[in-house]
Each structure stands twice: as structure tokens, then as C-alpha cells.
Length: 330
Ligand code: UFG
Image 1 (cartoon, rainbow, N blue to C red):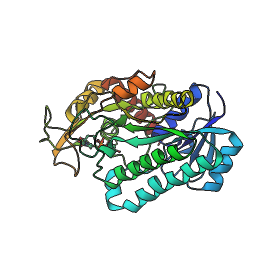
Image 2: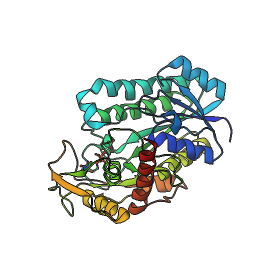
Image 3: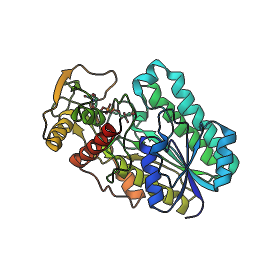
Image 4: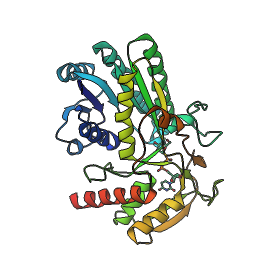
């Protein structure tokens, strides 16, 4: 492996799993993370950690030069959808403006490859499900818009400068490293599987079911849950593709192409734990689509990547194992 990979947000949930996948594939890794939502202990000790904001041009460029960085994987950002509605400028700063700075640093230092954490939230409420990459992107919240703006910047920059990119549009990321080396640690979770895992370990008393009147098989929202380690592996393969064919860039959905309802997820948690976690039927959250499922043919065609953990019980099992580990820690 030539050079090193800079992983921004490498102390966070998805980023820390990407660090593991890169190290396991033989890459040198330098993490840039300001540790606002990430944890230094989440960074594998084989990686270097630079505690800095990705918009700190001096620190970032110094790290790129010092470590011989040839590619950047950009995970750092803010991810809470309702917060993006109440504080949009935070999202345009931490996601859009910070990405602009980082991309400029990449161009200024001659980094040739860029992998960006985009999101299915850029599609808004899709007209056709499964969603294809060429579907209309009409985000319904500032979070999705802040990410879409970064996609546009990358597209334009790749035309003007010798840099290619892959923007991976994540669907619902869940689970944890099967070997127990990392997981989702951030407090104040809003994600269903994380919340259910917290309920299973006694950290909360029940799980709210937000909406039972969606146009789905059981009335609850359907999502395409992807195991975080599969997602991390897709990044490593995407980097190989960017290196092999430096004239092309890619927008790729990252999902399994099938969905589970909220009740199906909670059934899986009950099955795996042999518990009956209390469910409280509540009203819808603002802006939740009925169904969000990826059309994943493009990523399967572009990459050798094949999911290794496409199994709801397995995702839940790994999320629970991590949650138990976290509970011991505190
Ligand atoms: N849900 C519940 N109860 C909960 C939490 C969630 O019923 O306590 C339901 C939601 O209504 C939804 C499903 O579970 O139907 C999944 O909700 P999540 O909050 O886990 O995830 P979202 O689909 O809302 O959002 C995720 C990411 C966003 C991203 C979006 C689209 O969290 O960052 O996918 O890509 F924008």
C-alpha cells in the first residue's frame, strides 16, 4: 500500500470501523478528529491521531505532508437530523463549510482520492423505492442538504483538479465490529437499533415506535439496515477503485437493497435477547418517509464488495454485544 489514508471522524462510530478495515487491509492511517462526539479510545492504537478540526487548514495540511497521505476518507460531521432543523448553521458549518476546507486542503497538497460519507437523506422522500442513484435529490432537512452541497462541491472539484472521489450514500447504519473492537458509543442516541440495544441492557425502560400508520406491511417505518463493518469494507474497496481508475468518480448507494420495519427490528431484538422489550406506540416523527430502501446494483457492479453481515439478527447481536461492553465501562 502506497502512502497513508487520512480518516476524518476516525474516533466516531463509522469512522472508527473504517480505520479498522483500512488497518486490516494493510493501510497506514492517520485520524483527524476534534473529539467533540468521538472518543480517543475508539481509535485503534495502530493509527496516528491528530486532535484537530478538519477545517483547521494548517494542522490538516501539516498532517497530510508529515504522513504522506494519498487519500482522504471524510466521515467527520454532525448527524442529528432534528438538530439540523433547529440549528441549520451548525450543519452548514460542520458539514458543508468544513468539507469545503478539507477538499481545498486535498487539492492544495495534491491528495488524489477522496471518499465522502454521504447519506440517503439527500433523496428526501423518494418517489420510487428502492431508490436509485439517479433519483431526484430533494432533501427535506438541513442535514441532507448540507451533505448534498458537499456532493456538488466534489463533482465540480473533480472536473477542475486531479482528484477523483466516491460519495457513498449510506442507508441505516447499525451494528458493531464483530470482534468487539468498536461500536456506537455516542450518548443521546436516536437510532432505532442503538435505542433497542440500550433498552435490552437496562439503560432505558422501553422503545417508542414512531408511527403505526405508514403505508408498509405492518404500518411501521421500513429501513435498509446495513452492518457498519460491511459499510467500512465498502470504503476500502471504493478506495482501490479510485486508485485503479483515477479518471472516474462515483455516487453509490450503500445498503443491502431490502428493508425491515420497526416491529421486525424489535422482534429481532426480542429473539436475540430472549426478552420482551416494552414497545410504546407513538405518533410519527416529523419528516419520516414510509420506506427507504436502496437500489444497490451500482455498488455491487462497481466494487468487488459483497456484504458479509447481511442478517438482521447478526446486526442486532453485534450492537448488543457492544452495548454490554459500554455498560461495563461506565
Ligand atoms: N424509530 C422508532 N423509534 C425510535 C427510533 C426510531 O420507531 O426510538 C423508527 C423511525 O421512525 C424510523 C426507523 O425507526 O422508521 C429508523 O429510524 P432511525 O432514527 O434509526 O433512522 P432514520 O431512518 O430516521 O435516519 C437514518 C439516519 C439519518 C439519515 C437517514 C437517511 O439516522 O442520519 O437514515 O439516510 F439521514
